Amino acid sequence: MDIFVGSLPFKIKEQEVRDLFEKFGQVDSVKIIIDKITRQNKGYCFVEMPDAAEANKAIKELDGKEVMGRTIIVNKSEEKKGDKRSSFSGGGFGKGGTNFKGSFGGGGASKGVNAKGFNRGTFKGGSKRGS
Image 1 (cartoon, one colour):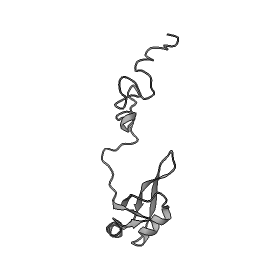
Image 2: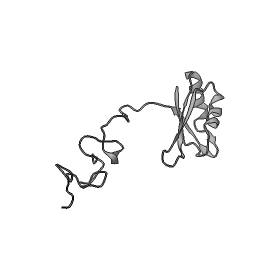
Image 3: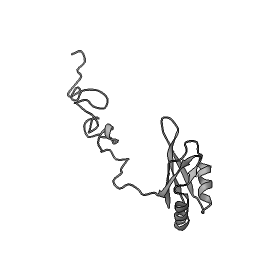
Image 4: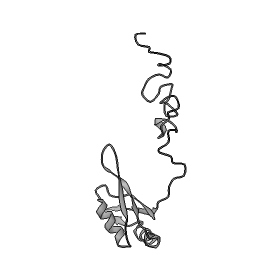
């Protein structure tokens, strides 16, 4: 069973999370989510436990527990329906998706400017250099 753990201390390590959950049973994996740019822990992780009964006991016992000065949130992780992060359609850069259907503006751009800052239509049919 996949378990979501939120409101984690930013200094916590995977082994420390593993130690918390191993008190309740076998832990297959712990994955703390890291920000790609800052390389800092985002404050949440996913724990995978193979036995559902052990996982449910861990959820019940650890939800609301204080860890390193923070009260953690622990619940069953559920996949978001319709969350297709690998697809090439969406609301544009400003809406969290990517839109490759003709422009980079999509729903995220405003006032006729696409995500790169160029006016829409500038490059239709050729270069406008020197105009």
